[in-house]
Length: 135
Length: 67
Image 1 (cartoon, rainbow over the protein chains, first blue to last red):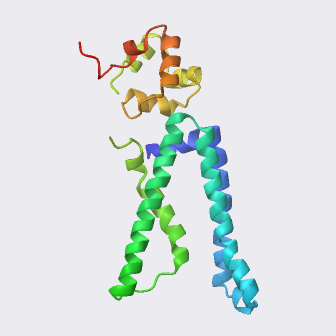
Image 2 (cartoon, rainbow over the protein chains, first blue to last red):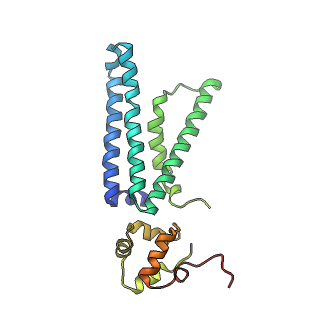
Image 3 (cartoon, chains in turn red, purple):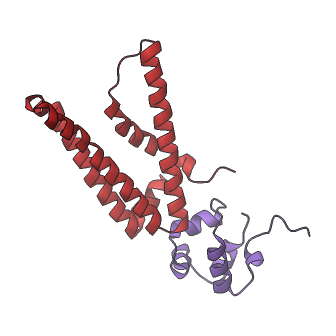
């Protein structure tokens, strides 16, 4: 995909990709620790602490994205900003719709932490639509 | 924005990467401008005009000008 090549070929993009994998790895690690049952043995305050720790790699990812937008040229910066906004909007719309379906249409429960994987799925899917601004 | 960037670039024997480097932008930015998928900032348009030693409107067609 052309958009992926855009992000792979600049020095700023290499830093961005490294940071993305690092923050995504931390997020996955925390989830693995939770799924493995490690949190079950913790007292409630520690569970709250670990729960909020999940937000740190997400905040880190937003920081990495903002740095990438700042340090890239105008085309790549604008492309990434559009891609991020589109992916956020689609993920929020889908998750909100599902939440209403849970409450009023009997849909199966989906945990809130699924919004982050959903965002990344959307991030890839919206790339072709982020290449050119809507006029 | 309709433009003559590709013609001006090739007339000078420059690759997209060469032009991007000369202007301080990525090759992808040049590709997008040539394909009318990115309207450059005024600053970048002036840089191009200076590089090609011409006027901005000789590079980018002004859609608002009545001719």
